[in-house]
Picture 1 (cartoon, rainbow, N blue to C red):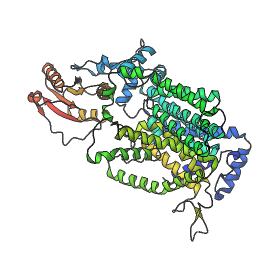
Picture 2: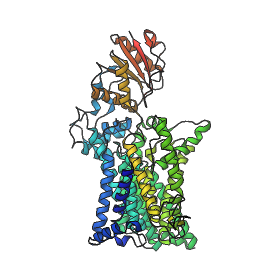
Picture 3: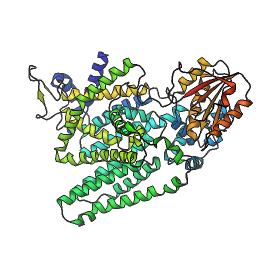
Length: 622
């Protein structure tokens, strides 16, 4: 492990030394202890054009980022939301799965079979009538997945997940551009790209067959336009027409990718109001708000609103939108009111650092928690001080305020939805994509200061020959940057090993349990309300198909509207038709079963392990 740390430490230092000299006018490239290495690398880099060295460094961060995102890409089973992506992107529908009757796994998995007759029109129509998301990503996935052969007759999971990987990797050079435009510093850009490459949150989103990494690209693009607009407001110069048109186009594509992109737009409105308020403090002329930069910003706002309003009829006509979002609605009692605060804080922390604190073994959880706690006690003051120093530079102050305004406004919106509208957005960590790029850019800006701290920041340690450090533990600025990057790297490894941001459902473990317990044929029954419950059973059916060990398993999706007894009746009718003996596994079955189970014997499952996403009861029907 020591060799690994030393190797990663040296690798990171040499990569940072690739930064062009023109970008490091206030930041040295290496420690004095590495004089010979620095001289060699400096001489090597001066032989190359600055843009070439820039491109090489970005390419290295891109390779690191895409490698992390590809590792174990198909090792974790897909969950319900991913099944929705697979089915709708194929142009198929969940409505083809029969309800209230026993069906074989192949029938349940039929929507996952590629459909050559399906068209892009089918993708859009099925989404509009059965789902609550806009179609852009699903159309792209429809085209992308056609490039991959089927896997055992089913759609390729690698093909479906590789598209988010590509978008996630593309966010690395894109966030470099955002930070470079914001701070006009190549070093800030490279440090931001380096942190994006290893962010555990970024890796988590990139390894799911969902649309969040594409939405992140639009967030980065929209924030870049906001930064450019801010500079023109400061200089009181007109916003270029091409920037205005690009901004509108990005915003329209963002809304067409995920409706929560509008939260990013709301944060931008808050930031622009703040900038207008600052200008009003410095000028009493109300006509300032009708100056050239503001007029074009108003035009961007109007055009963006039009681009968003066209989706309202689709949302209103969708009858399933309420049922599909039930999981983020609900009442709170007692300490439940504090849960959103800790959920939001946990997501913020996991954007930078996430060790295996979700492990089932205390010997892993406790040391991991202590390491993370120690890391943040050390790192948070350093990062906050870096932001404070950036605020002292007039050329960077406004950019820090803009990006911090985006983050604070987004978090405030999340709490408004949670506490006032009863929609707990903090329950879905993935929804924080709306401000994630701003967090990474702020982190890169702080690390740039940390790389070469000012003299008043440096502390001289007594008894150590005037060795300077930026913290209390004798760690200098460059080593601190490398340690923070390494924490991100090992956190990304935690995610790809499913020890962090663990999957909500583990059908693989559930199928293994059935194999161990049930030597006879099995019926797996669940109550059904939406395609979410179909997806839960699809996960089990897919694992059974891959294992190919259970004999003639059957599934029952007992539909339930408002009357729970409807599921009970469907279960009772199905049990009467099946030959015995068989084992009945009731999985996430939320309906009365007492009378129905008179002819079956309930097994004691208290000694059996729990399985994430699958609450079960076992009955032996003789």
